[in-house]
Length: 346
Image 1 (cartoon, rainbow, N blue to C red):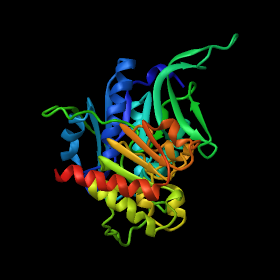
Image 2 (cartoon, rainbow, N blue to C red; image 1 turned 180 degrees about the vertical axis):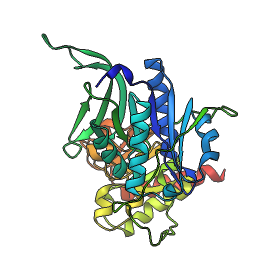
Image 3 (tube, rainbow, N blue to C red; image 1 turned 180 degrees about the horizontal axis):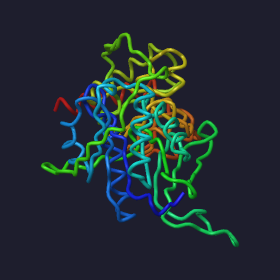
Image 4 (cartoon, rainbow, N blue to C red; image 1 turned 30 degrees about the vertical axis):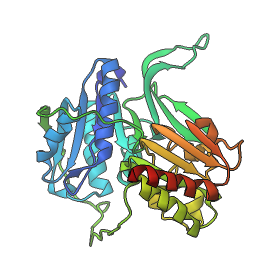
């Protein structure tokens, strides 16, 4: 493999029902940063049927170029035709870096494509940087520069691993939603558009979709919330979450929770923050009755302001909190709610 042939930072621009997923814009923001350090361009790969009209959106969020693979076989996501499409793009255009969102689609697509193009894949990344590998020079071993350093939680979130792929291209990663920052859209921006179709011949690996059933839910997306009031096992019961509901209502915020709460059946998984839940970046994050295990903090530590309430003064959550209150949440939360209501009524 001639590594010099591989140039550019590529992003799989996931779309569902001809609507680009938010993760694509987040990845374009990170791709633009990485491309700046490598003095190269950002390319979005848009796969679907009847999706050519979405290219301007990708340009506004940082794509210099959009490769469109548009074919009736790609109308709905199916593993085989999508894997064929993306692998063909990689083999034809040879990206140095290929980023895929760690969504349900991306987690299915990424590993299959990496195997087809004979490269490695680092899954569920939370940090991407350009740097040297090995990070610390080792006597007698070549230190390669301008490598993609991919960081992810490992061993159940108990440690953080930084991984590189120095001998194969592309350097490929799936990235968790919510951890990268999308840029402010550049209105009127245009990208070079390339239409590419490797050809699709259905075979016995093509799944036949009989029906698509869309779930209707009234659960809000906590990733969009500006204020989150999050509860953990320390809240005590599903009924006791009424205290957090009242506080969230007074603040104009949204209730979320830790994994322990979901495991206990107190709240649905859609509200879970953390490594196995969602990564959030609200302006204010209340951590109430949450101990602060690394699996949880990995999903909320980028919040602008973190306020922790816990009766255990040694709880790890206080290590990441901007403000901490040691005490009984059953007394503190109602008082806090009352004071906020008084302040807003003045």
